[in-house]
Image (cartoon, rainbow, N blue to C red):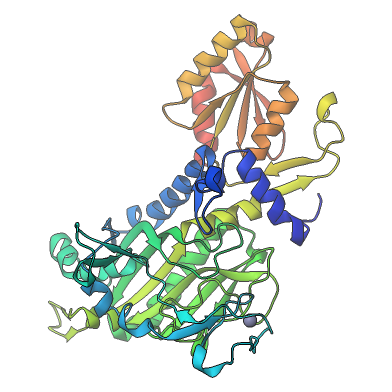
Length: 463
Ligand SMILES: [Zn+2]
């Protein structure tokens, strides 16, 4: 196994993602748009699988969490009350290198970043919300915003959801959806984009129990990444300190991933959304993958909610523990962690011998395609049987049918996109009514009877 060389692994991954249909620049034929990315046929499957896994773990499997799907555009009062509109009209400059932001007043025009000596962007009002207008008239009374976080929509629905579901504290409301931030310096592929999806959970607790639940959600979040195959050694916790904390947060722990790029430093407290993907302490690599915050009663108080415990008659404003993660950033971490290069190749077929091979060792729950059906030749009796097998599996799993190119090349193509199992239909299959199932990671091959194949595959994918 070749060790992942830090500098070029991103380039290789970006190239693979484009060639194989995972991710490419939005509106690329017109030059693209910085900070916007499209997810192709494989990328959409990966993203959906990430969301499905998160939803299953944190909504479906829990009796104390319910879901929500709210709008991107809301009454702008939401953003006034939350502090997103008023509090952020400061004139700021941002370091192009470490993304620290500073009050423009404190610096002359040729000043360099005090933290990393990087150059500053020009001075401007750094409100990163995208503006739009509702209805035909464009003026201040029709101005609305694309949400910069899904959290506020959860807070404003607190009472409605609670009444409808008769939930009692502690309980959570989860939401997956698009958010928009007009980042001054988007970058590092899909690490920091201007349009992205968030998976956020607002967990409402009695303020007396905030510490316990905060720790619980840090551990649960960490475990989710590990269970989906991320190497533990590439993860660490980082506790935000002092001015790194967003103004609403009593405590925030970032789960950091060992990304192959440098993004260090922290944002000053004028920002309402915390460190936004900076990493701690100047360590190369480790950068924020997700954050778990104790938002206290900041938001429910701002929107005027309170809560009464029916049993104890105690009345209080609940504290909120918020695990929040971007789908795209999670996808990047999963892809990087899965990306494996094997020098000299591992197959023995002539055309692929000694070539470098790429295997995307994605967790089977995340792999875009679970099974590929590969007839050994294009002869009609073989393709007919192969298509029958394809039809028998496709209602349950994402299955790819591929009859083009040599079998070695087709295996490698599936390895590159992370397909866990390849099913080869050969001439013996016509006689023994069996096929060969090849495992992506071990390359072990097993002969399985066609009648048993669906059961075999289901068992493999569910284990
Ligand atoms: Zn800097």
